[in-house]
Length: 76
Length: 371
Image (cartoon, rainbow over all chains, first blue to last red):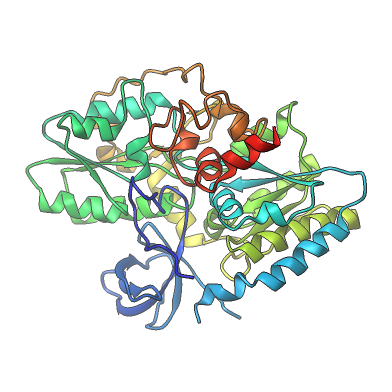
């Protein structure tokens, strides 16, 4: 089952207002700016603040809310 | 395979539900509050309540960020949004929250430049792209969202973006929980703790609930098996005569939270002495404003706002819903005068609001049949 995309919409409901966080995978990391390009399992990409969970490496799984990574996901 | 699939296995779900049923003491009725609106949404989206025995009742808590915004704060936002020099930015659901004379979406229809953003970072980007306009971000949310606002304000300050400011409506989760626990008309047996808030604050701030009020707390994830396992853990504590904070969502929630996020928040924000919560009234030290170091980015200081307290509509019973005293369908206007398309109360606005969750997942028809 596919989840709806991580969107903020007054029509289908806003995941940010809803206190929802999504799991994204870091693809490219810009350490100087504290940002990472991340993707969801469907390949949708967004720029994410990583200052709260650094260091981040490509392939890390991040829990993201309002374009900010709040935690690294430990799949163990 | 998606990572979430393993948390949605129907057979494991049924096994957990059977375990919950076996733990429930015959003749006893259990009331468990899910604090977070995200859990409310999951419970109705996946039909988790249908799997539970009749003796285990889930009560919806106050943890929906949109639901707790009072009408007066919406009016303050609209007053700023109507200024011709302002681009007003906010999250999607916030645009539909009714103020005393309509919502931000109505203000947009009337000509105000109100724009939806997914993150505070988007609002800052708009400010950089429009240096001749004042760009105001209307910040809402619990500790989940506050770090994002704090980081963005830090960026705005460091990069010197003079046309960016913020109306801060961030709230904190512990004070309303304490207020609920002091409420004489609500009897609860345990709490499903807010998973995403806890990624920031950790599990430790909830220790007062078992210590002072003798109720178990289990910090929970949001997938169906997370919620079912958390309910099972609460009942197991009751059976074992234990009472403590447990962390079911250990894959992302450290017991002490995200210390860097807490540091950033402490630098950018300070506690307000009082803040009005929709339906719950004024609660001391329950919300955040910008600290003195960030005063020049505070839209409430940059612009005149009415700052008037506006009473909720008489027909609206969001307060009782937020306190878990009544079910959404017991509200007089639920599904008739108040719908997601035309909400009267905030609980009908966001999909995480208890009323909208009931409405959107077909609870209206089922509950009415029961009556």
